Image (cartoon, rainbow over all chains, first blue to last red; front, side, top):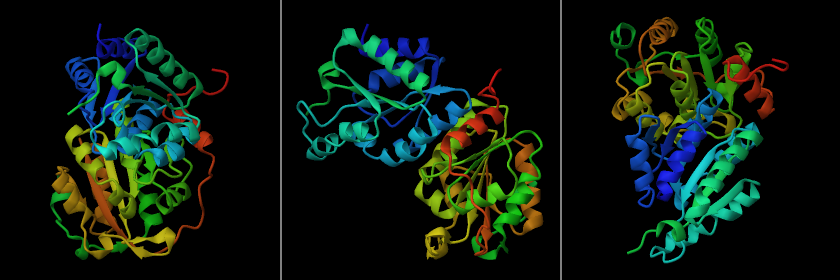
Length: 168
Length: 208
């Protein structure tokens, strides 16, 4: 199985049906698989903050979500996470395609990527990097389960080591 | 679409009304356990002052996210009516969400935009609506065809009745005076969220 197929399987096992996202090139196979599967309700948002809000509303209404974005999109989220997800104890689970490292060609992506893990650490948000195919199932499954059980956000970072990343 | 189409209005032509009065009029119509997502600040405070419904959620930050939260809830609970109350400053911060709502077209969503033309809570600085932007025109441009200004209190009630009875999404914009809220919400996020989830049936009470 590919990393995308494994993630689809883990989402189904954890009854995550809603996937609001801001697209990313590396995420394309996952987005395609989710869009083609009637188990999921998936759609684009205009901003990543919007996806956080949608996932928060859905959670309170009894529906689980995964939100997808890339590193630069994560950089728009500190306020939404610090004022909504963390203090209200709403488990927003994020999957972030990692730009800005291991062959990045855009200096803006490289710089903004440096803010991601410090922001996650500053908000005490559990985060793990998916770098190996044989770890994708375990890390994704456990990150979702911990987020739900502790009612706190969790973040999965999709490394170029796993996906090949985006290159010129 | 009678109430929304029979009295076409522009922002400049509608009556300037009271936020607390309109919020009370809206809340008085909620007989089917509709959920209300209050945006931050004064919109929220007057929702709080209109009665402590178990189906009300009050944001404490995350300015601009009342509409996305309401959309997520409307998707999760398609049988429940969901209402987002937003100020003009807040909706201006997340205009893209109007396009997302239009593209998802949830039948059970009503957005009410409380437009006083100012960032009232920070000292009355003008918002873009106070300088000429028209939220209804923006909403229509985003694809929300069932969007209109309320001409006066009676028209607002007609529009709310229609929006609560017929398939949405709907957007009602109202113009407000400068009256300030008299009380504020609690600021305990977990209590707010937990109370709301019990109110909409997704979290059991203790012992059950």
